[in-house]
Image (cartoon, rainbow over all chains, first blue to last red):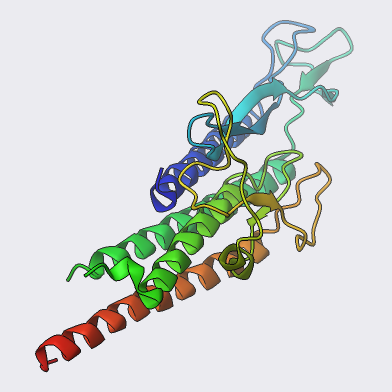
Length: 136
Length: 131
């Protein structure tokens, strides 16, 4: 395939992957205070996302894709809240392991990477325009 | 009249071909800038391509895996030795470096296409006497 054409495809795969990452981040942020409803029940467990290189066997183009969305295994912290339906006999509830700072950093990184892909897309588009301009 | 047989047009179009392939590799690096273990890549230098040094993998059977599809002859993709940053997950793509490379390529592409156009104008001038 024409390299300039495949750049558009590659950058689009990058943007798609970063968008997926942003989705996971927003799920984490939205569920940061989701708790269980019965004593001892686990609250929301933070999601993580991993990327992998995807090589197209026919064209040799290496784009990017989401390899897996997993759960973060770190321990939940406890909060004293005896009136909560999920409180145990000592009055503690488990709260989710989402760290707002971490999610914020992740979000920023995702949008920066998205921007980088967008710039590559734009650069390739400009190069194509130059070629087409030679027809004028 | 075959434009590509003239050394000037041949040079300009080979240059544009090479720049296109290189931009593709940069785009791959940027797309994979968050992939664990991904190593930044670059293509054979243009001077080497002109000398015919870095020949790509030959495919003699339809089931062989060749180099990157659509790439011109003599352009091979290899690991970038100038990548100066390795993150904790083993990724060696530095976005700043790739951005600089991408704009460099864009500018050179513009230069090559302008040259091609100028050469064409020169021919028109020689043939018709009017600009």
